[in-house]
Amino acid sequence: MKNLFLAAALVLGLAASAQTATTTQTTTTTSTPASVQTVPSQDQEKEYAKVTQSEIAPEVLKQAVAKYKGYQLVEALKAEDGSDYKLVLTKDGKDIAAFYKANGEFIKEVAA
Image (cartoon, rainbow, N blue to C red):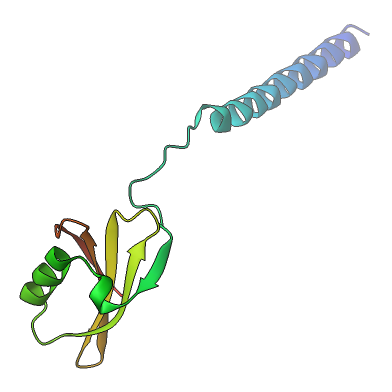
């Protein structure tokens, strides 16, 4: 009878311990997403609208021509807020997208 009581106490102790571990995991899992904050990235995709070559800021054209000699302009796009330009250029079948600020400052280049 004593062994039966001891075995029951041991089983209850293990069950309580397992339940506490599960509760701790659930609490940890639940609290992790709550502590993650979404910070807007500077490189988030902007909305661009097509523009003609004559609508591109002169400084942007000047810098692009100097940096990408021999490339042809495939498409020109301007950010909806007017802050920067995306120029899609091609040379020898290789397309690239060059990003410039409205003042002509180079931002980045990516494969198109």
